[in-house]
Image 1: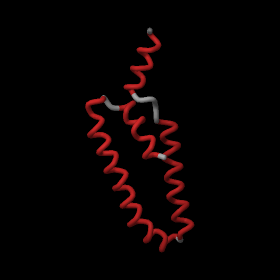
Image 2 (image 1 turned 180 degrees about the vertical axis):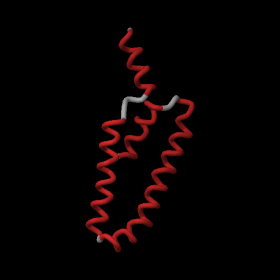
Image 3 (image 1 turned 90 degrees about the horizontal axis):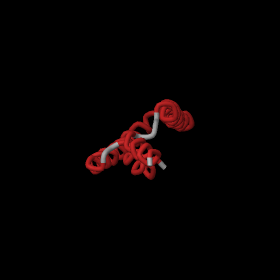
Image 4 (image 1 turned 30 degrees about the vertical axis):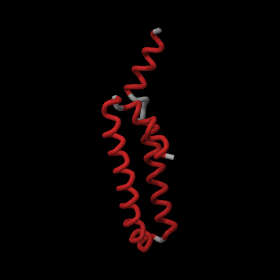
Length: 88
């Protein structure tokens, strides 16, 4: 889901000129996260068991969702567009 939503999300936070660089960095971050999770999962599952490892990853995702719900906002680009439409 996050990969699908990153395009529209990035478009509300960064100017059009910066989108290629930001999209590239997002792709690197996603692939790096997958790689790190792959190498961390096996040692964690040996220490905690697979159920607890899965619960840990789920808890981290839930925490990030709560933080986004609290701290996330409509990006400044979208805000400017919305304000311009409201004025006309």
